[in-house]
Image 1 (tube, rainbow, N blue to C red):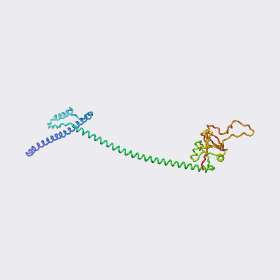
Image 2: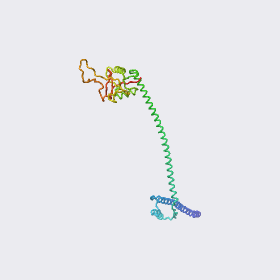
Image 3: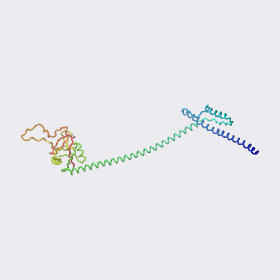
Image 4: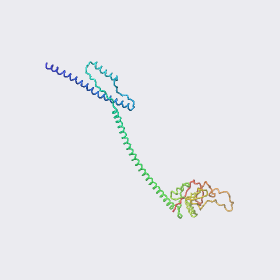
Length: 324
């Protein structure tokens, strides 16, 4: 029993001293760590304040309480009062704050140079992006130029194909006119049963490799008359010829611009022998031409082959001629 009491008297005071030492060391460590952190924050705040003053920027309100703020002091006092009410007498260690030196002009310049370095790095990235965009634009421009060249070649090939098709259609029309129509010497005549105005009929004949019929003499006129009578009998249809006086009234020309020297105008029927001649024109078949400036194109009747002047916009059959 005496040995146990002796052991307790030796160990308990040591344990109490050890716990007190640990508690004190912990408080001293917390105070020592808080000091450098607070000092660093104060140094950054002061440097920022000097930089704002040098650059002329407005001061920004911080979230931290400045030194001497009564709110911080009140919180520290409340903590101390609470500890006092508990009645515990614990040794307190006052944190050590070293005075923060003011930032020098060298620190300010270092900060500004750092920011400028960041801006320079950003500009470098922008230049890299711009170079990439320029490269892409150059590639697209080169591709567009190639597409334009291909489109030009395709357009030329299409134009050549259209010209070849036009030549083929003209050749086909010429052969068809000579095979299906009537041939006289170095030309062939072919009747078309499509109703067209005189200009449209001329265009259709040209597209097939010919032109509207241009009978240049009596022999061609007689051949053309027999052909139209046999093709359209027993009806009498007017058929467009390639003769007009659109350029000047009374000046009749072929479609190729040559002046017409042979005419087959319709004349009113002669009165019967013994009948008195009438000065009034025949109501159904007056002498031609009689249309004046209103009728400038010539059509041939399919029964007797006589010429009549008509309005050029009237839609009639037409006859084409093709070179042989």
